[in-house]
Image (cartoon, rainbow, N blue to C red; front, side):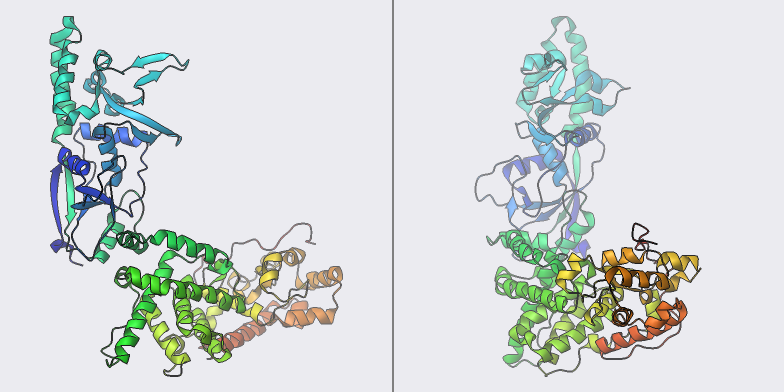
Length: 619
């Protein structure tokens, strides 16, 4: 994007800029949310203008590009005739321009709020004596007056009354909207000077000083303006807005596409909210965002175009590619969205079922939210075939390779596109193993650095242990969707942290995933901070479990019972490390790469959760 060729930088008189707002030549794009500035912000802004202080540049977009059609709306507080087409749209500066328009040009009291957030309506004045006082703060001279133009004392009696021009003049309270109304300004000036016949000379001098010090700065104020030309691409508009927006909401591709679709009378936000309600029924999908949905739709849209081009005779190397980058999402039409939104939504719902089968039950446990995008898109393309056992086994292997290969932590759009094309071809037996499978590598020493949920592979081991039949030490139950939430299953230390600290063991080892396993919250409380040789007999006794049954349950977590019962941490650790690597190899379909030195060893990346409860169940 070469902005040097797509924008102009200039200055514009504030009065002219506000006039274009009044006529509708300047409007807002519909993605801009409501005006939110409070009374304090408005008074501060007016004070800055009155002293010719800079208040920041305004950015606008020139309309007329058929590829960047955004639904416009008037600045808040202004009602325009139907079908008024704007010449430009405000991208940055909405809060400032809306505040200035309402305070200076609307002819109505400004609907704002006080410091407590309570809705209020205010007219804005300048108290002339305070404005001319060299020792006074200019903000103290800007006065906000209630809708009826009367201020009340604490007793509720009239304290000041500005409800007529004569009363304004007597109190030396100049109504700011008059700065741009020449006839009304002249009329008020005469009444002000003549308000006290005995002081006319002094009042004339004070008035002239006021005009020079306060009024002229408003009338001559120039606003720096960056005008993006109509040739600016939609992606560039989105990117620029993200970089420069200082007020309102952050603009992402969803917001910009919402405004684009609105120009075709399609409410994208309402449609997304309806789909979000469906996602909320699946706890594992609670983290899905609107941009995830759009990326998946872009993948299916471009995949479909590619397939049609190849079917029409295009060579694969000449056919359009599968893509989901920002510009591809922004290029979606309403027709594209309507064609693929429902299949993609069902794809995400199928992804939820798929993840449950792998023992991922909550959004916080999903290794990569981003991996759900190609997963949902692939499931949408495969339809009912995705339910076949052979297909599921391939998708499952691809998924685990992404998790343990830790492939989705950085820039992912290119990988998404390759995943969808390659996974679908692999499943349909027309392609080889996807690159996400062939490129994935898990290094054996990585286990020693998996210590918190910040790692996708950490979450993956947690799920594998549940998937492979890990039974709770106390209840003997395997973990499914019901027990996960009912029993508050989480990952906890096997050799308790308190005991490890007392034995001065290496924290890098006892806080790693090798010394952790999924357990119910109550079971973890029974373990407390005790040695295994202490807590195992206690759990057996309290839960009525035989030693053999307990050993079976320990083995289901790939724990060697004899080593745990003997408090042999080193022996336990070595045996379990090998067992976990075997599980990972089985999931990925390839052995880990053996390295003795940790791949990453960040000293601060330790588990700070105090999961070794020292409450009523602790010995």
